[in-house]
Length: 431
Image (tube, rainbow, N blue to C red):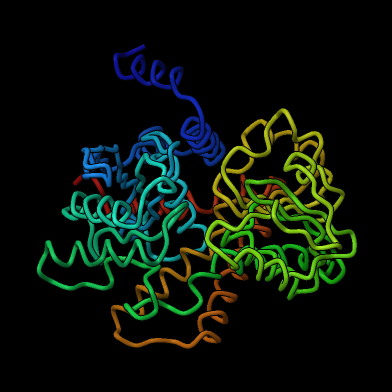
């Protein structure tokens, strides 16, 4: 074994978590597609990584510092694209995994982007508004040299939102002296944002689920669903599925779950969730609902389960308890590799995250296009275009899966990797 191979073997042995699972899936698809080892190696290694140290003066008058990252995985098919998350569990390996998955996600829905991801290791719930703005501006200033409208276009992710993106955009414009609204997506409507962006990921989950069900010769009408996570993605996934005829029977957030066998009045639930910052389902006391645990939600007797919270919610430890017939991944990586294997053995279809939750990046792409053109679309046009892209992508993946006798995840990885490799070889990289 040569030195390079020894190093690769050692690195593989030490890899854990989401990054290890993502790389294992890419390697497996590389073998299935009989790709050259050098090509697979390109897919496994991000093109650029930046680690930054964000230092702010807290309200207590003391200095506080936080580690942050921006990982740019692939620019083969276009500018880098990917969100920025604020969370205590953010690590460089998680950021690498999410950046690689963004490359695959953009290729799955066939939009002209590569993949990136950013994160700040912090707990924003403990910050005042001033501290939040200060940390956000500092982080944006530090990553400013490697982002831009034709280079890398960040967006919101976990614990970030349009206000945070507005602060980032202003900080980068101040540093560059050149206002460039197309540098970020997920902006407020008043600052060149796109209508439909807030609901986009959840709407995409609903469209992908609907099209998959239809391709099985069935209808969403009357199907039952459980949604784990009642933030923006979960809320709009529930609304989107309900609009298409499904009955939402179980929902949950970080505080626990609720079950209603007759189906929820979603408007009432939404009003509660929006009633105040941080409103939790544990405080909901509608007479139609009973409180349950998140563990009970994952095992609920429903047709469709949408895990729309965080990664690794369905694992080898609980995948055997899932009773849904379809799992539609609203979050990034909510099903572990072992959980995925068990669900596949049990005949449970998993609509993978790189397809199911790609509605957010699709409408981010629409926002970017509108910014570059200086022309804006109304909500009906945004939603119609989203439906078109998600429908086409779902048909591509389901057709490939059926033709090759593989799972939907394997099909999505194969289709996306093929598209990236085709672009890589056409570019003539290496000359």
